[in-house]
Length: 207
Image (tube, rainbow, N blue to C red; front, side, top):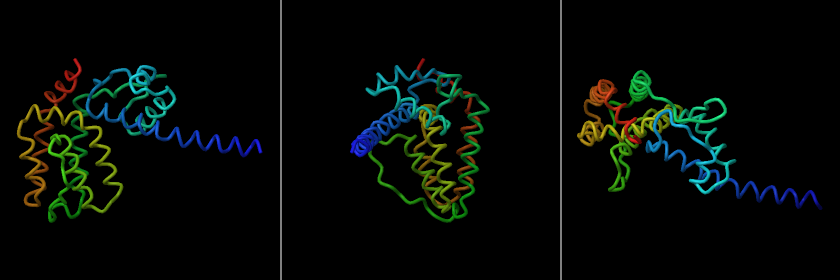
């Protein structure tokens, strides 16, 4: 009888713990996507637990998961926002371009349109568009890789809107099939050329 009671208690604990973990994980991920911590900033589990009104255990678990997603670095016995250098950012942009160009039907099909909230940002529109392009490949691994890059580039794309000013027009042109490969190359080369400036904006965001 005792074992049945213990099993039921353990099941209730798991059921209760899952929503807490999901909330903490989602909160931390959104914090990183929005660039609310500068590259290289220390992520203290105790402080984050207070901020998120949670215990340290789900915070640590979420940080380890985000480490696996390369949105957090494990630094010794602690955690930090990954440092971002000019070569790092150029590689991220170049890899995004390579993944998108690998979609075999990229040239022929318009990207399926999704309902966007009126307050959506350029960064949000970019990730919806690029995920839609990746779906044209029919390859779930390619889509997963593009989604992961969307998470890692989101904070930088917030700075793109400030630096370029015409990102909305670029994205609207990319949503059409005409000249998409040419436009994708131009879009990414423009950002690669502006990496020093975009990186300064990223580091200053929390300065």
